[in-house]
Image (tube, rainbow, N blue to C red; front, side, top):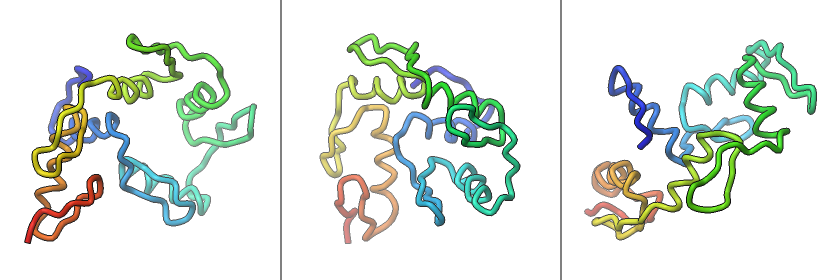
Amino acid sequence: MCGKAFRDVYHLNRHKLSHSDEKPYQCPVCQQRFKRKDRMSYHVRSHDGAVHKPYICSHCGKSFSRPDHLNSHVRQVHSTERPFKCETCEAAFATKDRLRAHTVRHEEKVPCHVCGKMLSAAYISDHMKVHSQGPNHVCELCNKGTGA
């Protein structure tokens, strides 16, 4: 999808989540959703003060455990700068990841041969996994079952 290379399948699959809008993990405290379980677990610890957050946003006072998280927050929330421009339309974004997520909208959609849902070709293989999760499994995307 983006040309990045990884040393093993685990890290490749973890990276693939960045190209998806799916956020299957939900914080039980505040209901914020996450793509990765480890990110959600880290976030949950922030509710009980277990995570030290010395980096404070000068705009809104929100605190962060890492300086790069503070910088990302400022760039995405408080800055009007949108250096990542879509080559297809007039949209512009604060981050490369948001631009990548947007460009999927311009890709030609193909139908799932099981349920008929139209998806970008890049997401078909991920979508097909929901159809192979055993009998009586209901796809969360298309609400169709896999049989039996």
